[in-house]
Image 1: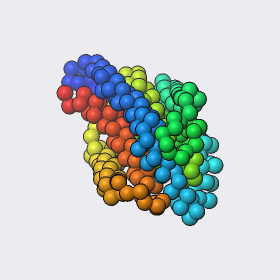
Image 2: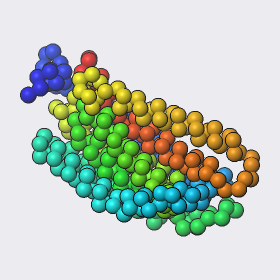
Image 3: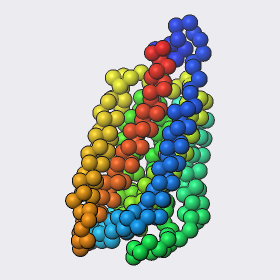
Image 4: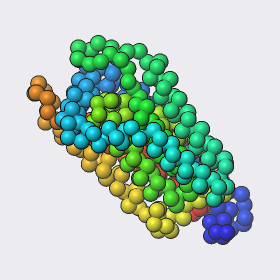
Length: 300
């Protein structure tokens, strides 16, 4: 038994651990919902948004000609790979650590995210005619991206807090690569991937509160120096990449804004940058959301 962890949770007098506050998780869910709505409003219901989104999809043909076969193979294996990886890790952690409730919550959140994506995709109307040459059929959110991100989120929820920084970075990277692959293969526009990430983030935030409250005995984080998977680098790296990607997207947009240039790779880079910013931004937010609350309780 980890007596240090037990004492850090119960306090010097052996009192019951403090109840996890709901408001950070509710706010995170609301921000995710707002991100989903904004992705639709900006990239589907505005001319500028449609043009940027569609241009990225068209320019993806350049990358597809070079690495399309490889990324297509990844996409073909993605559904089975995501489910298998998530199931193996969740089952292993459940059996090894007896985290039955956390496993059930994580898998329920994964199912809810994928079901929501399909319902949203079926329920939204066709893309409005904004003067941009594009397929009218709605493709938002991306089902492949939702599956990859929700599988990573399920693993993130069931592992111990000391493993979460590393699990978040690896899982976030996996989801980002899956989203970029759908763009390169011209299956989905960047906004479809962004919407998928926000759907998963919404359900993950709600599930995380439940996991924290039903598993207070093992949701203990002893700081970034207690374990290699808790090192600050796992949190710092996605934050730095997200900021640099946001700056790159801004610079490229400023360079091409106002020019009716022939198709190049600029909009593709913008689309990829948007996916990276959203993916690693949510990765950072999720890591902080599920480590800082238990860290604060320990030091009180």
